[in-house]
Image (tube, rainbow, N blue to C red):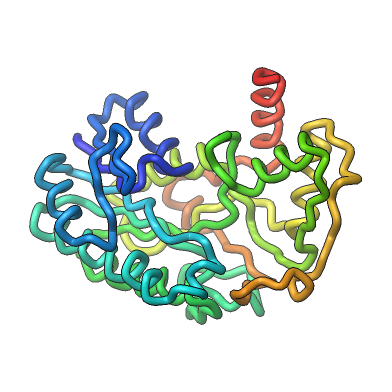
Length: 289
């Protein structure tokens, strides 16, 4: 099998690339920055068709997106081009080539007023990011057999990433205070566990919408405290704050989180709890010190 990972230079895409290699899957990765990857920019249609022509994939894993939530709010046209029109282009190429498509969606398709949410709950996004990602998801699901994976607060030990845990580690090392929302509830999800579950779903031929998140439904500040406990950090540098106090451009879903019963039925397992993932990161921190 040949896999094309769109967004292979990112946190999830890089993890998927490594996992494909371990599973003996021939893999092509893309990035809009080049740097040893196939060039693909979701806002540039010609680059999408060129990458498909080069890779000729059986499976496409669409990780790339404009994920900066406030940036999407400030530039909705670019957000729509990348997050909505881009996935539609990828789905069209998959339709022409017969490739299976797995798309990474988000908990932000919900308004966060009555979580946790199941796959059948009606979306109601409250930000440009959430709206454009939902448009991309709907375009993808028009393709027969396509898989859409909803996830959230994806983290890992990846020095090149700005994920929540790396922000926490870097702020602690630098002696900087870190304001953390105390009223945003969701399911923080470890990137390697997410990647393994998605690849398992794709290999089983699963289609439609699946929530793929860890079982712990936590406030962001509570998650930060758990991370500090696992890493041996004094949490005194953390400062809890209400989302309304952070001056962010885009509204966030607050009482969110995702249900995973459908995933557990399909795979016979859920993702490991946060404590296990944070222990693995703690070991990596010691290794890099």
